[in-house]
Length: 158
Image 1 (cartoon, rainbow, N blue to C red):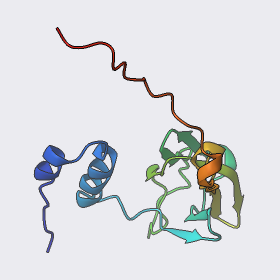
Image 2 (tube, rainbow, N blue to C red):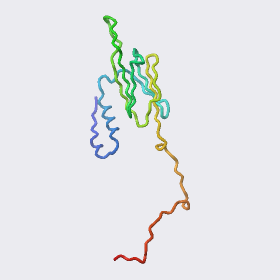
Image 3 (cartoon, one colour):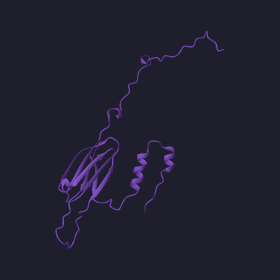
Image 4 (cartoon, helix red, strand yellow):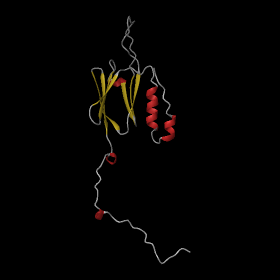
């Protein structure tokens, strides 16, 4: 049983969370072809991730990996092979397109195809200005005094 969430009340009181709400809505509506090809997502370190997809039967030149801001798209298109009349056709030879929403600052590091498994390594690389930094606490004597305007007692309001 699927529950549909309405995020419109959150849009009224939240600013800057549009991408998060869109990602939640997209996760809520899954298409029927969303389970092929099978894949795993593994966190291999604090900021390292690996996606492994089972793409048996696909050659390197039949797979395309595209990295856009906040989106990784893996697609496969096999050249048509007609080897006669099938008595049983259980091997999937269909084109696919799998989309992965990426967080800010997640980059594709490497991709490899071995034994029918496509492996894509990802790394989150925060810019220096976004990393936590320690702020030194100064003593009262070391604080610069703000230039405060002096009140002239000689002048009076008219």
